[in-house]
Image (cartoon, rainbow, N blue to C red):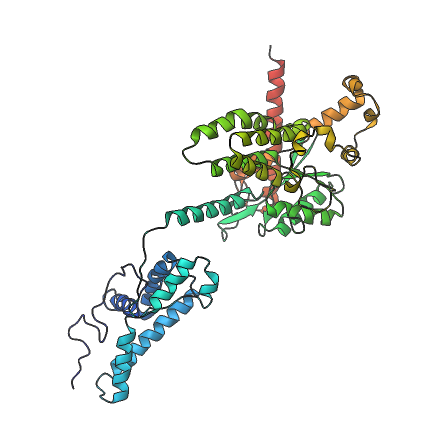
Amino acid sequence: MSVELRSDKQNIYLIGLPSHKINGAKLLSNRQVLTALFYNIREVKLTVSESANIVIRECIIFWEKARIPTKAFPNYVTKLFDLYHVWRELQKNCKKTQVTFKNRENNFVKDLDNLFVIAHVDAFDRMKIEKDKDFLKKPREAGQPGCLGGIDKELAEKEERVRQRRLEEEERKDGKLLPGLDVRSSKEERLPIITSFDDREQLLAVPKLESSSEKHQAKAISTALFDWNLHDKVQIMCCDTTASNTGRFSGACAILEQTLKRELLLFACRHHIYELVLKAVFETKDKNALQDVCLFIVTLYTKPWLECTVAIKAPNQDLCFLKALKEYGKVDAKSSKAFISKFVHHLRDESSDSVKRYIPSKGEITQNFFNMTLDDFVTQRSKQFLSRLQIDDSFLREDVSSWGDNPTFLVARRRISRLKVVNDTAKRAIKLMQDFNGLITAEEEQNSFCCVVFRNIEICIQTVKNYTKEKLP
């Protein structure tokens, strides 16, 4: 019996013709993988290693499209190497006629049209969709029944929403990725740290973070406070309500309190909270309900949004906004429930005690709640807010009707009205860092100092502009 290694220059022993591309609607078989491998080796003149890397990358595309978890990349290449070496051994012994060698050839040929498996060992446990699990079982059967279909639009849209939420979570972290000062790093995470008192603001630093973890954020803030000797003076934290900031045990705020060894008040950025409600509007409403969205924005949303930066209006405004959302249930009960849930979730501290809670939990949102007024929420603990800010509370012992002429009340009102309840300044600091990062120096400490100086210059210029406007006739 005579056996030729190649019938011509192109034909490959036991496999057939090489192929320059992998196509089809099925997961790849051993034959398809080998034909692509040999094309790169013989036609493109690549090494076996280079060819294997290219083929495996093409193979992964099919498995990712099928949503099947796979092994680490080096394991794929090793598997293809092993398959190639099995073929090499058969080629070397192709002229031997013993039964053992012929059985090996026959088994190899039978296995060529079977699946080239690169699925993870725990693929079935990791996969959550039953249809995907069934699809993984099919190709392992003889003849590989089943094929890849078109895009599941519903699932694709769901995954896109999840991806967008993750991106937004990253963007809403107080840190920001900026071009690195070090040539070895293309991007670096920075965190703007700003303090305010009355109508004055001060950019303390925009330090580079080792990572965006809660621990490193808290460390950067505490370092800046100690450097400026403000660690025993700061009383309030204002930030977005992401888990990395407000986590009960491991959030940056909780870690900062542990570092300073005292409790601080937490002001959730009100712009952030109202933005989440608006986001819920677009997520809840149908794409065709543009008119409903516009009516919601005009009738319920615009005024609270514009006034949410005013600290003295915050408690009553939140209560009125919640009641308005409840009333919206007469128009759209499902959307009303979703809006209230989103608003309440981000306006309360997640701790189990009542020390920091200043708005009821979702379980407490009942009909009785919507009949309450602002004074129903005032307790003995409310006075601690004034004492924490070193505000004289003697006006509380006077009749409310006399507060308008009470100097103590007027001072308290002025102090509270100047509190920052949004972190918009941090966003301006990020813009400043983007403009001046590394412009003058690449040395970290000097660069941070330059940004502080630039911010102070901006404040001075704005102050002069405001003063000039007031003096103009």
